[in-house]
Length: 217
Length: 225
Image (cartoon, rainbow over the protein chains, first blue to last red):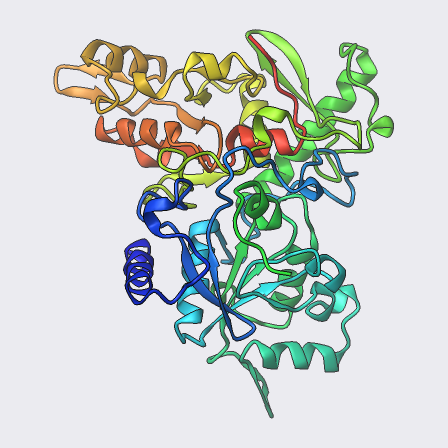
Protein backbone atom coordinates (compact mmCIF):
# COMPACT_ATOMS: atom_id res chain seq x y z
CA UNK A 1 0.00 0.00 0.00
CA UNK A 2 2.89 2.33 0.80
CA UNK A 3 4.45 1.52 -2.54
CA UNK A 4 1.17 2.34 -4.27
CA UNK A 5 1.33 5.76 -2.66
CA UNK A 6 4.81 6.34 -4.02
CA UNK A 7 3.67 5.26 -7.45
CA UNK A 8 0.70 7.61 -7.28
CA UNK A 9 2.81 10.53 -6.19
CA UNK A 10 5.49 9.73 -8.75
CA UNK A 11 2.87 9.51 -11.48
CA UNK A 12 1.41 12.81 -10.36
CA UNK A 13 4.78 14.49 -10.45
CA UNK A 14 5.49 13.06 -13.86
CA UNK A 15 2.18 14.53 -15.10
CA UNK A 16 3.12 17.91 -13.74
CA UNK A 17 6.57 17.42 -15.31
CA UNK A 18 8.24 19.04 -12.35
CA UNK A 19 11.55 17.44 -13.05
CA UNK A 20 13.49 18.77 -15.99
CA UNK A 21 16.50 16.53 -15.48
CA UNK A 22 14.92 13.14 -14.89
CA UNK A 23 14.29 10.96 -17.91
CA UNK A 24 10.71 9.96 -18.64
CA UNK A 25 9.49 6.68 -17.19
CA UNK A 26 9.52 5.05 -20.64
CA UNK A 27 13.22 5.79 -21.14
CA UNK A 28 14.10 4.35 -17.77
CA UNK A 29 15.22 0.75 -18.20
CA UNK A 30 16.65 0.40 -14.70
CA UNK A 31 13.72 1.17 -12.46
CA UNK A 32 13.49 0.98 -8.69
CA UNK A 33 10.51 -1.41 -8.81
CA UNK A 34 8.42 -2.41 -11.85
CA UNK A 35 6.00 0.40 -10.93
CA UNK A 36 8.43 3.06 -9.77
CA UNK A 37 10.99 4.62 -12.08
CA UNK A 38 11.95 7.43 -9.74
CA UNK A 39 10.91 9.28 -6.60
CA UNK A 40 11.07 13.03 -6.14
CA UNK A 41 12.33 14.21 -2.77
CA UNK A 42 13.47 17.50 -1.30
CA UNK A 43 17.09 17.93 -0.35
CA UNK A 44 18.11 21.23 1.29
CA UNK A 45 15.05 22.90 -0.22
CA UNK A 46 15.70 21.60 -3.73
CA UNK A 47 13.91 18.86 -5.59
CA UNK A 48 16.04 15.80 -6.33
CA UNK A 49 14.91 12.72 -8.25
CA UNK A 50 15.95 9.46 -6.65
CA UNK A 51 16.52 6.94 -9.40
CA UNK A 52 19.03 4.29 -10.37
CA UNK A 53 22.13 4.77 -12.47
CA UNK A 54 20.98 4.00 -16.02
CA UNK A 55 24.30 2.75 -17.39
CA UNK A 56 23.80 -1.02 -17.31
CA UNK A 57 27.59 -1.49 -17.38
CA UNK A 58 28.19 0.76 -14.39
CA UNK A 59 30.06 -0.78 -11.46
CA UNK A 60 29.82 0.13 -7.81
CA UNK A 61 31.46 3.32 -6.51
CA UNK A 62 35.03 2.14 -5.71
CA UNK A 63 34.65 3.41 -2.12
CA UNK A 64 32.08 0.64 -1.65
CA UNK A 65 33.79 -2.17 -3.58
CA UNK A 66 35.93 -3.38 -0.68
CA UNK A 67 35.02 -6.66 1.00
CA UNK A 68 37.47 -6.80 3.88
CA UNK A 69 37.73 -3.83 6.16
CA UNK A 70 39.18 -4.84 9.53
CA UNK A 71 36.75 -6.23 12.11
CA UNK A 72 36.81 -4.83 14.69
CA UNK A 73 35.77 -2.11 14.11
CA UNK A 74 33.98 -2.89 10.80
CA UNK A 75 31.98 -5.91 11.89
CA UNK A 76 28.80 -7.41 10.48
CA UNK A 77 25.68 -6.24 12.30
CA UNK A 78 22.68 -8.45 13.06
CA UNK A 79 19.52 -7.96 11.02
CA UNK A 80 17.78 -6.29 13.95
CA UNK A 81 19.11 -4.00 16.66
CA UNK A 82 16.39 -4.86 19.19
CA UNK A 83 14.27 -2.65 21.48
CA UNK A 84 11.50 -2.43 18.89
CA UNK A 85 13.70 -0.65 16.33
CA UNK A 86 12.48 -1.68 12.89
CA UNK A 87 14.95 -2.48 10.12
CA UNK A 88 14.20 -0.94 6.72
CA UNK A 89 15.33 -1.52 3.16
CA UNK A 90 15.60 0.87 0.23
CA UNK A 91 11.88 0.93 -0.68
CA UNK A 92 10.91 1.81 2.86
CA UNK A 93 13.57 4.55 3.05
CA UNK A 94 12.34 6.00 -0.25
CA UNK A 95 8.76 5.88 1.05
CA UNK A 96 9.71 7.80 4.22
CA UNK A 97 11.79 10.31 2.23
CA UNK A 98 8.89 10.90 -0.16
CA UNK A 99 6.37 11.41 2.66
CA UNK A 100 8.77 13.80 4.37
CA UNK A 101 9.26 15.74 1.14
CA UNK A 102 5.50 15.95 0.71
CA UNK A 103 5.30 17.84 3.99
CA UNK A 104 5.03 15.16 6.66
CA UNK A 105 7.26 16.71 9.32
CA UNK A 106 6.75 13.81 11.73
CA UNK A 107 9.49 12.04 9.76
CA UNK A 108 13.22 12.73 9.57
CA UNK A 109 15.90 10.91 7.58
CA UNK A 110 19.27 11.08 9.32
CA UNK A 111 22.73 10.32 8.00
CA UNK A 112 24.47 9.27 11.20
CA UNK A 113 28.00 9.43 9.83
CA UNK A 114 30.71 11.92 10.60
CA UNK A 115 30.71 14.93 8.20
CA UNK A 116 33.80 13.76 6.26
CA UNK A 117 31.85 10.68 5.17
CA UNK A 118 28.71 12.64 4.33
CA UNK A 119 30.70 14.93 2.01
CA UNK A 120 31.41 11.94 -0.23
CA UNK A 121 27.70 11.47 -0.92
CA UNK A 122 24.50 10.81 0.96
CA UNK A 123 20.85 9.88 0.41
CA UNK A 124 18.73 12.76 -0.94
CA UNK A 125 16.53 14.16 1.83
CA UNK A 126 18.90 13.20 4.63
CA UNK A 127 20.16 15.59 7.28
CA UNK A 128 23.47 14.93 9.00
CA UNK A 129 23.47 14.26 12.72
CA UNK A 130 26.71 12.39 13.50
CA UNK A 131 26.35 9.47 15.92
CA UNK A 132 28.76 11.30 18.22
CA UNK A 133 26.01 13.85 18.86
CA UNK A 134 23.46 11.21 19.85
CA UNK A 135 25.41 9.07 22.25
CA UNK A 136 26.91 9.92 25.64
CA UNK A 137 28.94 6.70 25.35
CA UNK A 138 30.49 8.20 22.18
CA UNK A 139 31.25 11.54 23.81
CA UNK A 140 28.13 13.68 23.53
CA UNK A 141 27.62 16.02 26.49
CA UNK A 142 24.24 17.03 27.97
CA UNK A 143 23.99 20.14 25.80
CA UNK A 144 24.70 18.26 22.58
CA UNK A 145 22.20 15.55 23.48
CA UNK A 146 19.59 18.23 24.19
CA UNK A 147 20.24 19.88 20.81
CA UNK A 148 19.89 16.55 19.04
CA UNK A 149 16.70 15.60 20.85
CA UNK A 150 15.18 18.99 19.99
CA UNK A 151 16.08 18.52 16.33
CA UNK A 152 14.24 15.20 16.51
CA UNK A 153 11.12 16.87 17.94
CA UNK A 154 11.41 15.91 21.62
CA UNK A 155 10.54 18.58 24.23
CA UNK A 156 12.36 19.19 27.49
CA UNK A 157 9.96 19.55 30.43
CA UNK A 158 10.44 20.00 34.16
CA UNK A 159 9.99 16.24 34.54
CA UNK A 160 12.41 15.23 31.78
CA UNK A 161 12.02 14.73 28.04
CA UNK A 162 8.62 14.44 26.42
CA UNK A 163 8.77 12.22 23.35
CA UNK A 164 5.07 12.36 22.43
CA UNK A 165 5.80 14.57 19.40
CA UNK A 166 9.19 13.08 18.68
CA UNK A 167 9.68 12.33 14.99
CA UNK A 168 9.87 8.92 13.39
CA UNK A 169 13.59 8.99 12.67
CA UNK A 170 15.25 6.84 9.99
CA UNK A 171 18.98 6.38 10.63
CA UNK A 172 21.70 5.01 8.42
CA UNK A 173 25.48 4.96 8.05
CA UNK A 174 27.82 3.05 5.73
CA UNK A 175 25.93 -0.21 5.82
CA UNK A 176 25.86 -3.62 7.43
CA UNK A 177 29.53 -3.33 8.39
CA UNK A 178 29.13 0.12 9.96
CA UNK A 179 28.74 0.75 13.68
CA UNK A 180 27.94 4.46 13.57
CA UNK A 181 24.14 4.35 13.32
CA UNK A 182 23.86 1.38 15.72
CA UNK A 183 25.90 3.39 18.26
CA UNK A 184 23.78 6.48 17.64
CA UNK A 185 20.55 4.50 18.03
CA UNK A 186 21.82 2.93 21.28
CA UNK A 187 22.56 6.46 22.51
CA UNK A 188 19.04 7.66 21.68
CA UNK A 189 17.44 4.65 23.35
CA UNK A 190 19.50 5.39 26.45
CA UNK A 191 17.90 8.87 26.52
CA UNK A 192 14.46 7.26 26.50
CA UNK A 193 13.64 7.85 22.83
CA UNK A 194 10.86 5.35 21.96
CA UNK A 195 12.17 2.35 20.02
CA UNK A 196 9.13 2.29 17.75
CA UNK A 197 9.96 5.81 16.54
CA UNK A 198 13.43 4.67 15.50
CA UNK A 199 14.02 2.99 12.13
CA UNK A 200 17.33 1.57 10.94
CA UNK A 201 18.36 1.32 7.29
CA UNK A 202 20.89 -1.45 7.83
CA UNK A 203 22.03 -1.61 4.19
CA UNK A 204 23.04 2.05 4.41
CA UNK A 205 25.33 3.62 1.82
CA UNK A 206 26.76 0.18 0.94
CA UNK A 207 23.43 -1.10 -0.38
CA UNK A 208 22.35 2.30 -1.72
CA UNK A 209 25.55 2.52 -3.79
CA UNK A 210 25.49 -1.08 -4.97
CA UNK A 211 21.98 -0.49 -6.31
CA UNK A 212 23.17 2.62 -8.17
CA UNK A 213 20.68 4.86 -6.36
CA UNK A 214 21.05 8.66 -6.53
CA UNK A 215 23.36 10.29 -4.02
CA UNK A 216 23.92 13.99 -3.31
CA UNK A 217 27.08 15.75 -2.23
CA UNK B 1 15.32 -12.33 22.62
CA UNK B 2 16.76 -13.01 19.21
CA UNK B 3 19.87 -11.05 20.10
CA UNK B 4 20.38 -13.26 23.12
CA UNK B 5 20.01 -16.29 20.93
CA UNK B 6 22.65 -14.89 18.60
CA UNK B 7 25.01 -14.11 21.45
CA UNK B 8 24.64 -17.64 22.67
CA UNK B 9 25.15 -19.04 19.19
CA UNK B 10 28.12 -16.79 18.62
CA UNK B 11 29.85 -17.94 21.78
CA UNK B 12 29.15 -21.54 20.77
CA UNK B 13 30.67 -20.82 17.39
CA UNK B 14 33.68 -19.25 18.98
CA UNK B 15 34.18 -22.20 21.28
CA UNK B 16 33.82 -24.59 18.37
CA UNK B 17 36.31 -22.65 16.27
CA UNK B 18 38.79 -22.51 19.13
CA UNK B 19 38.41 -26.22 19.78
CA UNK B 20 38.90 -27.02 16.11
CA UNK B 21 42.06 -24.92 16.11
CA UNK B 22 43.36 -26.69 19.25
CA UNK B 23 42.73 -30.18 17.98
CA UNK B 24 44.29 -29.24 14.67
CA UNK B 25 41.33 -30.52 12.67
CA UNK B 26 41.12 -27.40 10.54
CA UNK B 27 44.16 -27.30 8.32
CA UNK B 28 43.16 -24.26 6.30
CA UNK B 29 41.88 -21.90 8.98
CA UNK B 30 44.42 -19.52 10.51
CA UNK B 31 44.26 -19.04 14.28
CA UNK B 32 41.95 -16.38 15.67
CA UNK B 33 44.86 -14.06 16.42
CA UNK B 34 45.85 -13.97 12.75
CA UNK B 35 42.35 -13.05 11.68
CA UNK B 36 42.12 -9.27 11.34
CA UNK B 37 38.85 -9.29 9.41
CA UNK B 38 36.46 -11.10 11.70
CA UNK B 39 32.74 -11.68 11.26
CA UNK B 40 31.90 -10.05 14.60
CA UNK B 41 34.30 -8.95 17.37
CA UNK B 42 33.70 -12.32 19.06
CA UNK B 43 33.57 -14.55 15.99
CA UNK B 44 36.56 -14.97 13.70
CA UNK B 45 35.27 -17.98 11.81
CA UNK B 46 32.55 -20.61 11.89
CA UNK B 47 32.77 -24.28 11.02
CA UNK B 48 29.93 -25.45 8.82
CA UNK B 49 29.16 -28.69 7.06
CA UNK B 50 29.04 -28.75 3.31
CA UNK B 51 28.02 -32.09 1.79
CA UNK B 52 29.32 -33.82 4.90
CA UNK B 53 32.69 -32.03 4.90
CA UNK B 54 33.77 -29.36 7.38
CA UNK B 55 34.23 -25.97 5.79
CA UNK B 56 35.63 -22.93 7.58
CA UNK B 57 33.43 -19.97 6.96
CA UNK B 58 35.22 -16.67 7.35
CA UNK B 59 35.84 -13.37 5.59
CA UNK B 60 38.43 -12.73 2.91
CA UNK B 61 41.53 -11.57 4.81
CA UNK B 62 43.07 -9.44 2.05
CA UNK B 63 42.17 -5.94 3.15
CA UNK B 64 42.63 -4.58 -0.37
CA UNK B 65 40.32 -7.18 -1.87
CA UNK B 66 37.41 -5.94 -3.95
CA UNK B 67 34.05 -7.52 -4.56
CA UNK B 68 33.71 -10.50 -6.92
CA UNK B 69 33.23 -8.81 -10.34
CA UNK B 70 29.99 -10.75 -10.89
CA UNK B 71 28.50 -8.69 -8.06
CA UNK B 72 29.97 -5.25 -8.83
CA UNK B 73 27.17 -4.07 -11.14
CA UNK B 74 24.77 -1.40 -9.93
CA UNK B 75 22.31 -1.25 -12.80
CA UNK B 76 20.82 -4.50 -14.00
CA UNK B 77 17.58 -3.79 -15.85
CA UNK B 78 14.43 -3.51 -13.73
CA UNK B 79 12.24 -5.30 -14.52
CA UNK B 80 13.26 -8.02 -13.92
CA UNK B 81 16.03 -7.07 -11.45
CA UNK B 82 14.01 -4.84 -9.15
CA UNK B 83 14.59 -3.86 -5.53
CA UNK B 84 12.63 -6.04 -3.10
CA UNK B 85 10.90 -4.79 0.04
CA UNK B 86 12.47 -5.55 3.41
CA UNK B 87 9.53 -7.81 4.31
CA UNK B 88 7.99 -10.22 1.80
CA UNK B 89 4.95 -11.52 3.66
CA UNK B 90 3.47 -11.29 7.14
CA UNK B 91 5.12 -13.95 9.28
CA UNK B 92 8.09 -14.55 6.97
CA UNK B 93 11.07 -13.21 8.86
CA UNK B 94 13.86 -11.44 7.00
CA UNK B 95 17.35 -12.35 8.19
CA UNK B 96 20.92 -11.33 7.47
CA UNK B 97 24.40 -12.84 7.61
CA UNK B 98 24.71 -13.51 11.35
CA UNK B 99 21.36 -15.28 11.42
CA UNK B 100 22.39 -17.34 8.35
CA UNK B 101 25.67 -18.32 10.01
CA UNK B 102 23.75 -19.27 13.14
CA UNK B 103 21.49 -21.55 11.05
CA UNK B 104 24.48 -23.12 9.26
CA UNK B 105 26.17 -23.76 12.57
CA UNK B 106 23.03 -25.40 13.94
CA UNK B 107 22.93 -27.67 10.90
CA UNK B 108 26.60 -28.54 11.44
CA UNK B 109 25.77 -29.39 15.06
CA UNK B 110 23.19 -31.92 13.85
CA UNK B 111 19.98 -29.89 13.91
CA UNK B 112 17.75 -31.56 11.31
CA UNK B 113 14.96 -29.01 11.68
CA UNK B 114 16.85 -26.34 9.75
CA UNK B 115 17.82 -26.10 6.07
CA UNK B 116 19.62 -23.39 4.10
CA UNK B 117 18.36 -23.28 0.51
CA UNK B 118 19.96 -21.63 -2.49
CA UNK B 119 16.86 -20.87 -4.52
CA UNK B 120 18.73 -19.97 -7.69
CA UNK B 121 18.87 -21.88 -10.93
CA UNK B 122 21.78 -24.37 -11.07
CA UNK B 123 23.97 -22.23 -13.37
CA UNK B 124 23.96 -19.41 -10.80
CA UNK B 125 24.55 -21.85 -7.95
CA UNK B 126 27.56 -23.25 -9.83
CA UNK B 127 29.30 -19.85 -9.83
CA UNK B 128 29.54 -19.92 -6.06
CA UNK B 129 27.21 -20.29 -3.12
CA UNK B 130 27.00 -20.32 0.66
CA UNK B 131 28.72 -23.36 2.17
CA UNK B 132 26.16 -25.63 3.75
CA UNK B 133 23.36 -24.59 1.42
CA UNK B 134 21.50 -26.99 -0.82
CA UNK B 135 20.35 -25.95 -4.28
CA UNK B 136 16.61 -26.18 -4.82
CA UNK B 137 15.72 -23.75 -7.61
CA UNK B 138 12.64 -21.54 -7.19
CA UNK B 139 11.23 -23.22 -10.30
CA UNK B 140 10.84 -26.40 -8.25
CA UNK B 141 8.79 -24.86 -5.46
CA UNK B 142 6.44 -22.58 -7.37
CA UNK B 143 3.60 -23.74 -9.61
CA UNK B 144 3.47 -20.24 -11.07
CA UNK B 145 7.07 -20.67 -12.15
CA UNK B 146 6.38 -24.02 -13.77
CA UNK B 147 6.63 -26.67 -11.06
CA UNK B 148 4.21 -29.56 -11.55
CA UNK B 149 2.58 -31.69 -8.81
CA UNK B 150 5.39 -34.21 -8.76
CA UNK B 151 8.14 -31.58 -8.52
CA UNK B 152 6.31 -29.74 -5.75
CA UNK B 153 5.86 -33.03 -3.86
CA UNK B 154 9.58 -33.85 -4.23
CA UNK B 155 10.58 -30.44 -2.90
CA UNK B 156 8.16 -30.53 0.02
CA UNK B 157 9.40 -34.00 1.00
CA UNK B 158 12.99 -32.70 1.03
CA UNK B 159 11.79 -30.00 3.40
CA UNK B 160 10.33 -32.58 5.79
CA UNK B 161 6.65 -32.16 4.96
CA UNK B 162 4.53 -35.36 4.79
CA UNK B 163 1.79 -36.13 2.31
CA UNK B 164 -1.33 -37.50 4.02
CA UNK B 165 -4.81 -38.45 2.91
CA UNK B 166 -5.97 -34.92 3.74
CA UNK B 167 -3.13 -33.03 2.17
CA UNK B 168 0.30 -32.00 3.35
CA UNK B 169 1.31 -32.20 6.99
CA UNK B 170 3.84 -29.48 7.83
CA UNK B 171 4.20 -30.28 11.53
CA UNK B 172 7.71 -31.68 11.01
CA UNK B 173 8.59 -29.36 8.14
CA UNK B 174 12.00 -27.76 8.46
CA UNK B 175 12.66 -24.08 9.05
CA UNK B 176 13.98 -22.92 5.69
CA UNK B 177 16.49 -20.11 5.15
CA UNK B 178 16.08 -19.14 1.50
CA UNK B 179 18.24 -16.85 -0.56
CA UNK B 180 19.13 -15.91 -4.12
CA UNK B 181 21.29 -13.14 -5.61
CA UNK B 182 20.25 -10.45 -3.19
CA UNK B 183 17.94 -7.49 -2.83
CA UNK B 184 17.60 -7.15 -6.60
CA UNK B 185 16.77 -10.84 -7.13
CA UNK B 186 13.27 -12.22 -7.56
CA UNK B 187 14.05 -15.94 -7.42
CA UNK B 188 13.73 -16.60 -3.68
CA UNK B 189 10.75 -14.21 -3.34
CA UNK B 190 9.01 -16.22 -6.11
CA UNK B 191 9.99 -19.47 -4.40
CA UNK B 192 8.70 -18.27 -1.05
CA UNK B 193 5.39 -17.21 -2.63
CA UNK B 194 5.18 -20.70 -4.14
CA UNK B 195 5.80 -22.38 -0.78
CA UNK B 196 3.18 -20.24 0.96
CA UNK B 197 0.68 -21.17 -1.77
CA UNK B 198 1.25 -24.84 -0.86
CA UNK B 199 0.44 -24.08 2.76
CA UNK B 200 4.01 -24.08 4.08
CA UNK B 201 3.86 -22.23 7.43
CA UNK B 202 5.19 -18.66 7.14
CA UNK B 203 6.82 -19.04 10.56
CA UNK B 204 9.07 -21.75 9.10
CA UNK B 205 10.28 -19.57 6.23
CA UNK B 206 13.18 -17.11 6.58
CA UNK B 207 14.29 -14.77 3.79
CA UNK B 208 17.94 -13.79 3.48
CA UNK B 209 17.27 -10.68 1.41
CA UNK B 210 20.92 -9.63 1.10
CA UNK B 211 21.68 -12.96 -0.55
CA UNK B 212 24.84 -13.51 -2.56
CA UNK B 213 25.16 -9.75 -3.17
CA UNK B 214 25.73 -8.97 0.51
CA UNK B 215 27.55 -12.25 1.19
CA UNK B 216 30.06 -11.34 -1.56
CA UNK B 217 30.39 -7.67 -0.57
CA UNK B 218 31.33 -8.83 2.92
CA UNK B 219 33.96 -11.21 1.52
CA UNK B 220 32.37 -14.25 3.17
CA UNK B 221 33.45 -17.75 2.12
CA UNK B 222 31.74 -19.25 -0.91
CA UNK B 223 32.17 -22.68 -2.48
CA UNK B 224 31.81 -23.91 -6.02
CA UNK B 225 30.13 -27.29 -6.50
